[in-house]
Length: 406
Image (cartoon, rainbow, N blue to C red; front, side):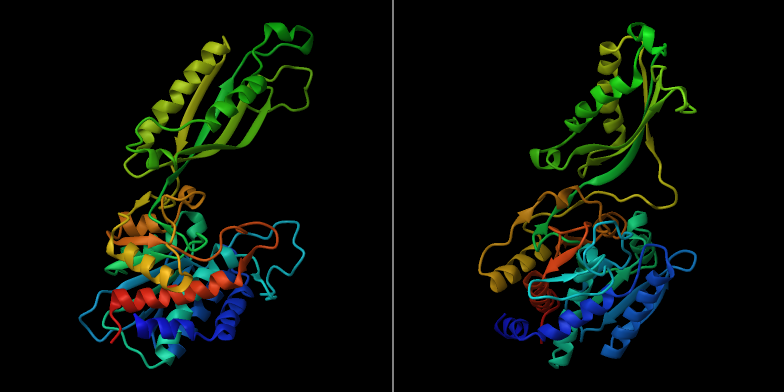
């Protein structure tokens, strides 16, 4: 630990910030040419460092960037996972979203929190060890993937191609907390059919819009009946994201004097490990049955949407005393001098992340921990500089522990 801690404290901070700033300047919106360009650049950087690096096919023209730092043998392997694709830029920015601006507190840019800071942290940790002439017994595998915003198609492709390790760290933004459980995400559609009348006789109608307004808070408060523990229930959540109501299923909006008799709402749900969408559907149905009783004449239907391809993120769970978790906890305390918050912490516990694919499809034991989070996916998205640099240090110490520093 002493040698690893000395190396961690001596990282080249300006080089680490420069690496992240360069990554931000790539306009790697999900599914664009910039996404591939950044993957190609990551392979170039890893190759220059001396890693065995290559582009891994995903779908169409999309590729992951994979790099392996080979160990000398006899140690456990550790895989780092993070996505390169970003959301589009929203309104309200006051700095250049692709400028990679660094001031005295933050580094700014679209995707810097979600999640290029996490990607850069694992890369810089490896580079620090290599430039210091250090070797590990076990392999370190860096997987910088595309398509996380389409349900994790990049990581799913990586796992199906045989990219695996003994342990993994997914670098999604958790504000450096150790996330040991997160939810499975699913989408749903609810359709309410009422009875129309002209507004002059609305007392005879069943107003689908008013019924929808009644339904939303009921769904907002909903948790699911098959939660095996309070911790699992704590990451249950339902959110209605869109509502459209008008006359008929064609949404005849030109006739507002009519009472709306049709509403379609869509949303997302979260269930914990071991919970099922089938049970969630039954719980939804129970809420809708109550709504129908409260609004006589209303008909309510729900369906859970099946995503195309592999765009479905499973839930993830690891024991708090698992080897990878305790190693990360020790590294955190060595750098920050206090215990690392650990568990099904929210809001990260509501995430859908590629950790689900690594856990379910890859059969690996791992943890989610990365820099950023509090300024995630918002105008002037940014990461606290101390958090980013401490993540580099914590990853470095964890690598030395899991993979065994020689």
